[in-house]
Image (cartoon, rainbow, N blue to C red):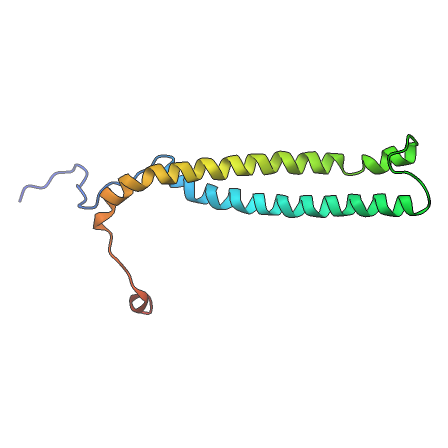
Length: 125
């Protein structure tokens, strides 16, 4: 009969609200951005090679000192540098998220004992 106006205590363990909560979405996003950047770099290098090949078909040298050769060589420099920078950032983010998830797995194994297991048949109900 003793009731209080204070907060009720739950029987479920308190889940970690630290950086491990954001690690899984960061790992997914970092991996996805890294794959997109790698694809973009493949396209950029292919276009750069194609432009150099087309320019040299006419008997010109892509390594020459003409303004047109310099323009063709520098055509994708900004996109290439930006894509490499974003790729490095995405890989660092994915690595850091993986490390956080790896470190949080021990505390999740100890605290996660109260979770119910749901199998395939329970999903249809």
